[in-house]
Image 1 (tube, rainbow, N blue to C red):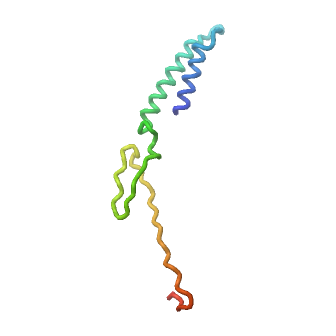
Image 2 (image 1 turned 90 degrees about the vertical axis):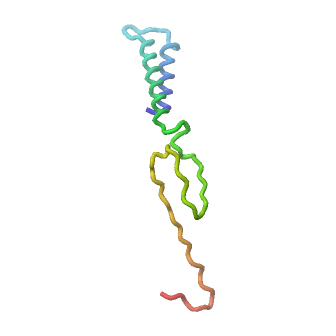
Image 3 (image 1 turned 90 degrees about the horizontal axis):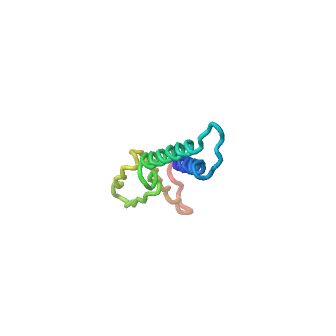
Length: 104
């Protein structure tokens, strides 16, 4: 259950508890509303605790790269996921015009 579902459950429960005054026979809307509010609050708290940090999964963290040094240690909320390293090789410049062709 995510944060959005938790908030929807809390809102639906609040509507059932405080927004609806008519009671159908055989159904206690106040009890159902309180149950939805409690489930929504528990889901919200668990989502926040299991979200690895209060600001999200860490996709927006900034890193500084200095050429020739080791990468900085990642904070704990990355969860040990390995990032893919891409190496870009530069191609040699083309030979000057009119010179001999490059060897095979």
